[in-house]
Length: 148
Image 1: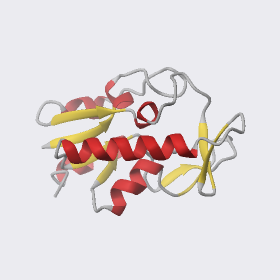
Image 2: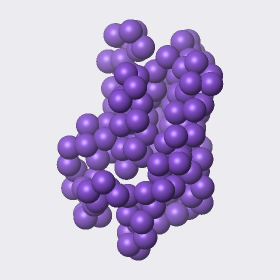
Image 3: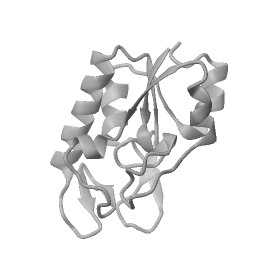
């Protein structure tokens, strides 16, 4: 199976703070699956490191108050293009992120508070019927055979 995956989960230092969020569960996927690592924020033109961003309504705003919605939308589109081009079967994305989070993301107050919602890429992929998992669900996803 070919899986689009957030590059930070594999140890790439591409997060807003210039660090990774390596996940042991994500690394186990490489044993039996082909992984396609992406950092949609970088694909959208944002640097690393960069100010943190959160969703405020339908916009994505940095902690400095700069609207980064266009970069987030461009990055989501580019990551979705790679998903299609490389015929991926599902996606494993970084939980709670304004780009990759699924079901629960930070609420725009930069206080660590979560709200219901999807990040830009997760929403785009889910809207197209793609199975999207977070790193917190990899073991469950494997039991369900991921893309099925």
